[in-house]
Length: 466
Ligand code: NAP
Image (tube, rainbow, N blue to C red; front, top):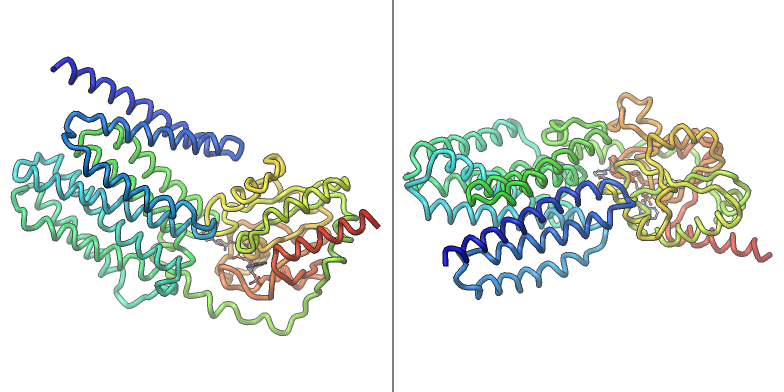
């Protein structure tokens, strides 16, 4: 019997070890588009192994409830996996909410099972687990609600807001500290859950819907840290590793996103950025723009040697990536050198453009990162901007009063000709006008990205046959 138990334990440890290695490799492989698919597979297999290892656990005496939970989880997970690409940020927020809720429940159960005999270190990590878990739960639900627009997107601010929020957090930490010393004070435990639950809501209230992707990535980090803390409580090395990976990668991602938007973390968290949007949109009226038809655009593209396509959020909204692929094929066939310039925060989530273009089978070596392509714009005949706006706005370089001042941009205005596909003169995410559109070298191609690109492809095909 004892040998059986020890053997079982060894198998579990080996399975957990393989799962941990797969998680690390998964993150590494997801770093480049070429290996990203392999990275996803590695992560999936790692997760299956982690679940299988847990199911082998000696402590499980009845699988009935686990089976019910598995069926329920699968029932919820499948539709969640089928959402539109543009809804992935809020879907991710929901996943964090579920994970954080689960962590909080496990922490609560562990506390009431162990109290009053909870060693200090254990009580400290358990407190961290439930505080982070509960604030991530409500914070993520709020973030998902704002992104899905079931909650108002605009930041709601009032005087002394940061003081109120930080005081709440301080109360939760003080209760945790008391419980570390007096783990028998069971009646205080619900306070340590309730206060962070309220904090999670209030933390998101002053942040505009537009900043939610960055916040979600930060909440991802909190969820990871709370899972790592749970790993200490449950003495699971796998959870500690997976939680730490999740926590650190979420944090690094938030930093990368903030940097690419030229915003500091504190500005995202406390700056109520979305407020500038509505007012800043004004001022576009009197200036004139030049527009062109699909036929004219096709002629210019066909005559070019070097074309750089700059995709943005509008391409994602229009789901134009497959038509863009057709355009790529048509131009490449004519001997035009076509590349794609990817801004790190184009779209609404990290890697948004890479994922869409990969879905349309655009060769990876045609996707260029901002720093690698910017020097080539002066030698580019046509910069074709498809549903991108802020990431091409030259005001970020010169206008110190602009909310995006200092944000690194794609230097499309340095190309010989710029063509911009968008439906109107409406601003993008930052809510500001784009001086690019009024340049002499710029042609506006007004229309939905998918149908406009389609029309250009047809024109090109017509010319080829004609
Ligand atoms: P953007 O500045 O939001 O502009 C997108 C443009 O697409 C709009 O001007 C819109 O103009 C156009 N558009 C929308 N639907 C369209 C359609 N069906 N067909 C054609 N055009 C359409 O987008 P971006 O240049 O990609 O910049 C991303 C912004 O999001 C940045 O400000 C970035 O800081 C922010 N952000 C990104 C992330 C991330 O992780 N990627 C996270 C948070 C925030 P019309 O309405 O006139 O068509």
